[in-house]
Amino acid sequence: MNARIILALVRKDIQLFFKDRFFAFITVFGLLVYIAIFFLLPNSVDETLELAIYAPDLPEELFTELASEGLVWHQYDYEEDIRLAIQAGNEQVGLVFPGDTMKKIATGEKVAARLYFAAALPVEFQQAYTLLIEELGFMLAGKPLNLEVEEKIIGPDRAGQQVTPRRRMLPMLAIFILMTETLGLASLITNEIESGTLRALLVTPLRVGGLFLSKGITGVSLAFGQVVLLLAVTGGLIEQPLLVLVTVLLGGLLVAAIGFLISSVARDIMSVMGWGILGMVLLAIPAFNVLIPGLVSNWIKVLPSYYLVDTIYRVTNLGAGWAEVAQNLWILLAASSLLFALGMYTLSRRLQ
Amino acid sequence: MTTNAIEVENLTYQYGELVAVDHISFEVREGEILGFLGPNGAGKSTTVKMLTGQLMPRSGKAFVLGTDVTRYPKQVQAQIGICFEITNLYEKMSAIENLKLFARLFGMQDFDAEALLQRVGLGGRGRDLVERYSKGMKQRLMVARALVNRPSILFLDEPTDGLDPVSSEAIRNIILEERERGATVFLTTHDMHEADKLADRVAFINQGKIVALDSPHALKQRYGKRALKAEVALPDGSLVSREILLDHQNTAQVVSKLFSEEQVVTLHSEEATLEDIFIHLTGRGLA
View 1 (cartoon, rainbow over the protein chains, first blue to last red):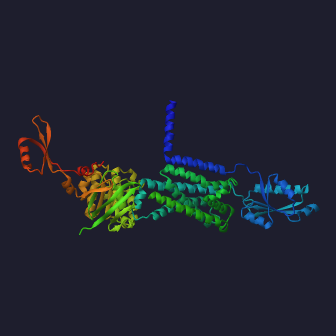
View 2: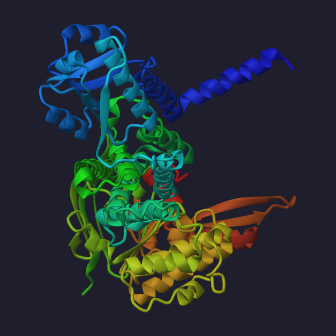
View 3: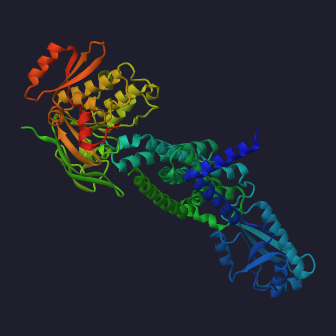
């Protein structure tokens, strides 16, 4: 083999690759997006423990000392504020020491502390926090404290029925099925544009609006049907079936919209795959976060799939009802509708 | 009284700086076959797209079946049939499924796909997937699809381009049958012979402008050369051509002399072809 010839061929192939404007663009764009995703993920292992606390009686020096050991305290003025913060998802753990704690320590009386946990907090974390409180008591008294810790779960208590990895996986499987249908819809439309069949349809009494409606129904039905089948088989429809169906329907609308967007820029099946995989990676990030809690930060809330994943997870695994996920559903509806309108606009421009 | 199926006035379209169709005006009568002739890039397809509501003209008017196609394209599209130059069938579906889909879009009741396929010479092949069809069969199916709604105007864009003689002849027969039925046919082609055979009138379009519009016979009379062409054998056995102009004052004597003094092998009239006329008018061929 002549190395020079091989090199010349490789150079030619690379040249041709980048002459294809789509591949040149998707290569650079995809690279940038994947790099951005990498840097958005946490760069370090978080070894600090965060705790909301209401302890009016404890000395400030104690908090300073604990902070130096990797504990982060958020002090609250009322016990009720801690409960509300946990309910809102702003805090995971809350600790309450009554106002007479120091006095009881001094007299050797039993101190009754209360620990609040968010329902989703894994049991291992709950145990770690309980040990922490006992250590705290030792620091205060200089000896094992006569302490009674009352643990309370805010939200549905999952003790003994923690969410299994299989159940955590469910939203991710749903997202992948939905995105697969997105690719299917996008390739269907792209193929129709490129083969000219859409042109043939549009010189009949069929209007562009009717065409979009039919394609939208196709996309939503395929996505919805398959995810519903998955959830039915895996028991995902046992809790709040109507709520789950509405959520999946909105998810179907979301992926149909993305299918429209992809097909308005894709020229062939390869470009559908290029755009589709990029979309799939982005939309699947919230599902990874469910699988591995704490993987990514709050920025994932800018992804519309977050509201789909979060709703499916909370409804099917944590027993959430309409009221708890209403905000998610509204955001999902708004985002899906907006993207659907954008998809119709870009696609109609391509059809012109 | 003859009415017009298509009326076009100062129709114009530009692709950026390029003027594809430049202020053209013409009419097509009901029941007429109009051959719309021109080389590639002359503006034929752009004109068809505007007349069928696929493109919005930059200026001018286009009335199809009395309806302003720029304002009511769907109303027009419900009454016309279009056979595209490029095959755009659902290849993974059968011919019958293709036709029934379009029949449903046009709201055709009691549509008989088999009968239509029989008419275009595809009887018995209706259940085959279109991807298994030959080019000629696909083109016949394209024509059949354009006939699904029994259109008042049939737009055919290069319907016989690249087809075998049998398929071409089948499509030509369908075009003539449609005219018999009363349909108007707008035939876009760069095949002069086909236009000559089929069209009642032909329009020559070049660089976006219509340079001539009349019946083939009238065009030949106007632009052709009236002459006889004789092939005569010389004493050494070789053949030479002789041209005799018919409009010359001593034509009769020339013909008489030819037959008395030379050995005439063949004799035929030298009529101009549409292609000759096109070249005469535009200075370029149709290729």
